[in-house]
Length: 218
Image (cartoon, rainbow, N blue to C red; front, side, top):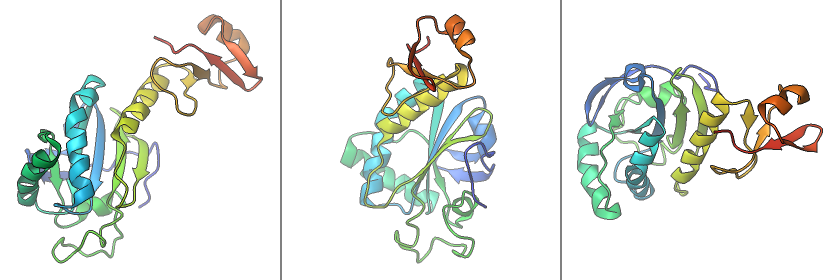
């Protein structure tokens, strides 16, 4: 099953470092960021989990919950948490999903259906494609998907930036330009007529007939 933006994020029940969760129930009325890892005790992922721990309050301020997944046992996750704190100085307080039977990795199309049904004997290279990020809205629909190579650590400041954009554009009839950051000008969507734009976004600028910009709405 190939997952695309606006698809319903598949629901599942899983064991985590914070007990059993039912994913959609766990999300509730929040936004969610699910990010996956090919195996515990891997170097790049160790730095990533610490980076997210450092940013967890910033995600929470945006109404977003974070949750990690690694293709290993929950008991291994708990041991890994100490290494993460030793390396990065940050304590992982968000849940980490155990996926020893590869069920969730397959459900989210991170591993092929014929990948087997056990994490035992698998190397990080076998699970290389389990390095995805999914941003999921309160409506349980996928808003963003990203997949990174094993040798490139993820930029979670970028995930925060995208989350800001998604939340802003969900509320207002605008889009965000390349490299946009909070407080910068935005683009008025093509669905808004010039007449309506003058009422909704007074003083907007026409750069091209198809490109109109305005100050970021409050």
